[in-house]
Image 1 (cartoon, rainbow, N blue to C red):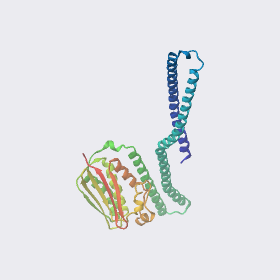
Image 2 (image 1 turned 180 degrees about the horizontal axis):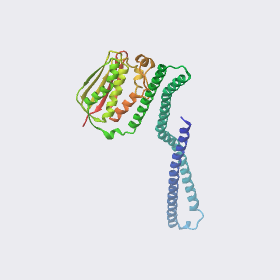
Image 3 (image 1 turned 90 degrees about the vertical axis):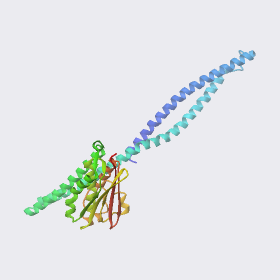
Image 4 (image 1 turned 45 degrees about the vertical axis):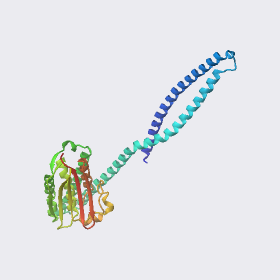
Length: 337
């Protein structure tokens, strides 16, 4: 546990314990007053009964109501002290447990934020380092030709494009986390979504000699059109990126009850079963050998964004894969009601 959260847990435990003990102390005072008052009334009634029935005891020193009262009040006080000690011990454990339960989500969010910041810093540093090194090498070379300079500038522009892509993805993530999309939900045609998404990825598919098949039937989805198109683009882009040349990527769609199910099916390298459960984590990328084999680059944000879009549309997304056979991404989204 982080020292900051250990300190916060200790302080919160003390606050909870102080609150419980304050309530117990006030309750004990009230109970003591009520009990001793009742004791006094009871002794007074008993003494009156004895005096009425046995006048001989009037003014007798044999009866000592004050001593009986003091003894009874003392016993009540001891029992209340014992009760408060039990409350103190029980409340101590309960307060610590409650403090941990209260702070656990905050601590987890803090750790996620730290990891996220570290990951973003690493991803930003890589292209920046490449730009700096290439620029420094070019400046040190006094005999750099025009062609070499153009090559250096082109390489730097590629790194700038990577940075721009990362920043855009991070901005998109922040927008998704703000839950602003749900305010713009309308009825969207599944066929329109498919066509728009395929149009965006078709140039990349053509460059890699990959055929795109559209098998989406009619269907109406409640959602934000731009985000749903982005969801399909992410899945199609991944499918194209990890598919061999001259293969096929198919986008299918059908209505099942109150859900529209869209599937992106490729004939690519596949994903190891152990890695499937992590593919939606931020900055997670499957093993380097797979990325190198497909000559694929990225920041590992695409699928996490895709999942967030599906979640905000009250839908689900899952991947099934077989090594060497391909991967299927399935998205289930609620129909228009």
